[in-house]
Image (tube, rainbow, N blue to C red; front, side, top):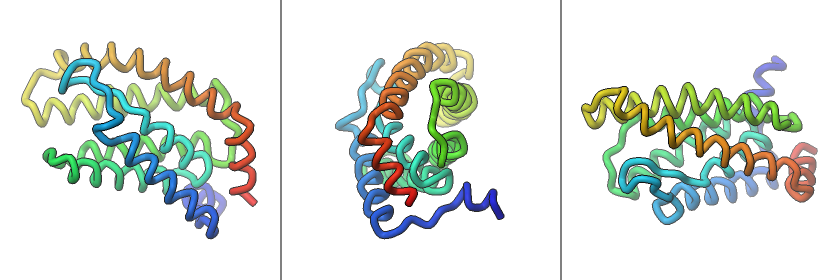
Length: 180
């Protein structure tokens, strides 16, 4: 019973409002307007992880995974790109991993680094590279090398930003109010 509580929580009225706002922020930050291409149409970077991180901290793995999957589907459909369910699975897993590490816990630099390494190695480098290989019919090793370099930079930026977020007094205060 205790494990179920950690995976799924039912937000109260203010929690639902915050969850809605964070979902909107996730959609905006994940949109093409806020996606930066390190290599045009190949390797991209987005700040959408910030909203996923906050959802995971405040609402848990279920909601972080659900919103991640929803955002992936929604953004793919409105962008006109071809939908591929593998990327949705990756978004769900990322939110779930963040939720397992951060829900109802005070994140530390150590837990941020460990969660980021799990997401980067398993989701971004392995699964997402596999999805790109399936979609584009290119050799895994060719794609992996360019993605590996991008992920080194990405993990450093994301760890730095996530560490700043967990030290922000306003974020800490809001998180405490949501848990009441």
